[in-house]
Length: 485
Image (cartoon, rainbow, N blue to C red; front, side):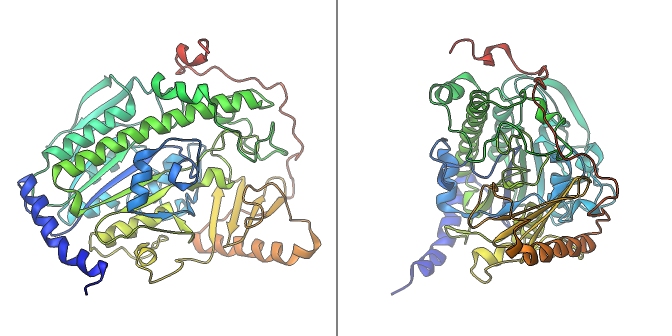
């Protein structure tokens, strides 16, 4: 009797033929790639990944048929706008120490796919400047060249067939719907025998957190619980407590304010999830689904009350871990706790497209993980933020070093996943601490990071932000100020 996997292999050609007949096209020689990326989405905001307080039915279904990477990370940032280097790393497979944020002089993912015959299309946020975008994509609709905007008034442009950016306008409607509409239109009109790479870069759930009212109201009526590591203030000066993201609420943080912000954040994600569902439905209807790999991820996480912080400019788990799900032909439902980077998608996607990766990458092909050929692709991960923080983690422990204040944190993630108990001064773990400090230095040498791990003139460690008020947010609409509750 044939195994279930054998029956699947025998049925695949028939499924492909039926799908191709339905769309009036022939199957491409290489598979299609649909890459969906959110902006500022924590890894713990997917229902199927264990969050019982958020509604993400479409991502849940993608999880049910795909492979989940539960320890996927953004490597870090050289700027408070973390999404810029995060996306630069995704599109090059290299750490930000070795690639400019504008991607100048580096072959990028869509560029390599286009050279191999892929139809390359983009919609949504491109935060790495226009020249790199024009190198990479042959078509684009509703492309946003910027970091953030009012979600109901997004400045966008289109990429014409002759390689020009045209039709600059202030788009009407909500950003997630606008970008989903563009992706759906592309999927419906694609009839070429050539494979496609469609890059759909949402700006949600990045602030201003202004979900459509129907998606916000349920979370206001039953506000999400506080994160387990909620604090009114961060306990020491990490060097970035005055950053823009940290000004989105007054100090000290109150439970009421954080739960309100979580309600808005969850509403943004549930609305985004609905748009993902629309895109996946269009993919099925187009006849392309059976030969398309769908990848869902985000550029970085967010604090939102965890450790007394709001932003992503820190190296705690909540701010550096991202969701990552890959589904498609030959990928069975499953998951892994292997330590992976967002930049691993560069060689992974090239591998799915049966293309060789450039030499000297920092990323690793993730396919051996879902194939069961490997249990890990690296033994440790390195994380960094500007000149303020460096970190490393292995399967159990995580160390964060703050060079400007000569301070170290050590966490046992197996016993303390929310990073609440600093073990750096526990005598029994002094050897572990020193080993991991050496590992930080080893990673720095590997990536070309010249930041010293200590200073002769440390900044004050003590800090009290009490009384620092929330600064006005020019994009926040009046109705979301919660007057009607």
